[in-house]
Image 1 (cartoon, helix red, strand yellow):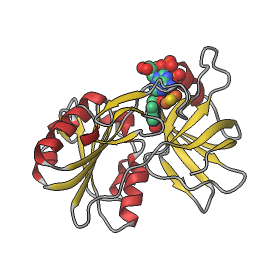
Image 2 (cartoon, rainbow, N blue to C red; image 1 turned 45 degrees about the horizontal axis):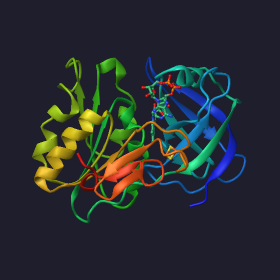
Image 3 (cartoon, protein in one colour; image 1 turned 180 degrees about the vertical axis):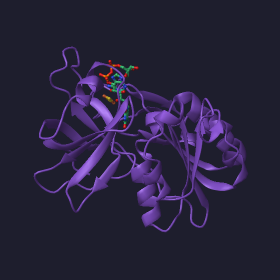
Length: 255
Ligand SMILES: Cc1cc2nc3c(=O)[nH]c(=O)nc-3n(C[C@H](O)[C@H](O)[C@H](O)COP(=O)(O)OP(=O)(O)OC[C@H]3O[C@@H](n4cnc5c(N)ncnc54)[C@H](O)[C@@H]3O)c2cc1C
Ligand code: FES
């Protein structure tokens, strides 16, 4: 898939909660085909000390409008600078990068599991899966009810199950505490979020023989396989998370 370096215009910066916002980006030409799980490398101008581009998952794509979205959690100086950008500002991107999630096994139930801003690639994935005839279940975990984001968007795709750490909405606890994970006989589980959470989901899937793919958020430098700072130790040897991933089947990981 051809990669582009392009300056795209922000047409909306939408705050979803205290720390998370989406940026909708518009291309002057046709946006390239993108697959769920792929990411972009963003150059962040105006943030002294943010030299490297920053990676963000493709969150949603609107081909007819030539726009797509990224969902960003403020984590440091670069993302804080991004949060202050507004309509009309330009962002330079390398995209689309990385591999993508594979389609679920036929006639088997599908679960998407995400925690916090780890839900970023799951909206695009859920829409893609739904367009191929599956109705995914979606399990989302947040710290508390004030941090829940995009519930309505996910509800349009399938059944949504929620956890909050303080029990203010949904089941109290973290996503891996929710009984739906164990009870529904899923054929494929897709997971993105904190690594500790993905480890638990992966361990459960391995024990039950469930197909499971996780999206890793390893530190990245170049995003294009040149700097080797994103290497993952796998059963197939050292692989670059930016070019061989960020999506991995858990059977390939030494977890
Ligand atoms: C493939 C991939 C997809 C991602 N998708 C999303 C997403 O959709 N939404 C989202 O909010 N975040 C996503 N992240 C994480 C996001 O890239 C970091 O939060 C962001 O780079 C932090 O930049 P900063 O300058 O604000 O933080 P800094 O002040 O530089 O550091 C704050 C934190 O961010 C981490 N971080 C810094 N630079 C990088 C880097 N180059 N790569 C990875 N982590 C870094 C640091 O380890 C630290 O914990 C993704 C990461 C990867 C690898
Ligand atoms: S980020 Fe440079 S090789 Fe992966």
